[in-house]
Amino acid sequence: MPIRRNSLYIPCSIPCRIPCSIVFPTQPIDLSPSMFAAPATVWSILMTNHYIILGLSDGTIETYRLKENKLFKTGSLETNKSGICHLLTTPSGVIAINLFAEIYFLDFHADTLAIQHYIKSGHTHAITCVKLLANQLVTGSTDETIRVISIEKGRIVHVLKGHLFPITALGLCKNGKGQSDAKVMSADESGEIRLWTLTSGRCQFILREKFENDIDSIRLTQRTGFCISRCSL
Image 1 (cartoon, rainbow, N blue to C red):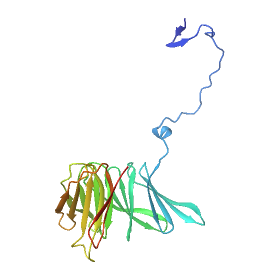
Image 2 (cartoon, rainbow, N blue to C red):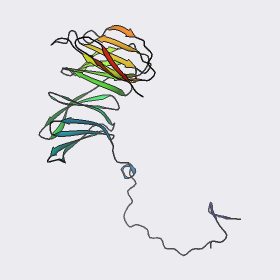
Image 3 (cartoon, helix red, strand yellow):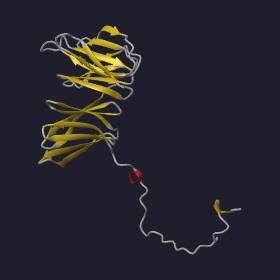
Image 4 (cartoon, rainbow, N blue to C red):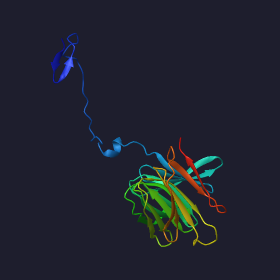
């Protein structure tokens, strides 16, 4: 039978007194949360010219320059502690979106990133898909809504409501040079597809075709207007 000593079970065959020495540290021990934090992982990647931009799980954005087949770290920018899920490039800089559905507009000059301004998208849950058309950003979320955001004005233009399940895919198309006839197509987890007018935010038609799996991509063609969707396996 084992013997219980100080809440530990010790077999009888092992001596209860074992010679040992204990050395106490002379310096304070660091027990901060960072001591136990796991290293940040890459959540999003953006390649532009000779640069690679990484969005990390701890909210940090790192920039690297590709030179002679080698990567050299050129900068690091800390945002909120929420992970960076999406990165997009624009003529004026970079857009970063985190898990809290916050949108950061960044300047990218001389190997460094700087926050120009940021807005809250208004989504109550994470953003699952993002599309960019000229000066407008379209976001879909697990909160079942789609939001059209003006990059120039930095504010929400339209909130598209109607889906009853999380948004899984977005597709954009415009027939002319302007945005008056621009369309956005959205799909949700149930397989429902909706076509919206980007300028008015109105739904033009609903396709309630039930696919066997979630739709994870949509493409709109300029000439025929057909939708090409791909279901995940």
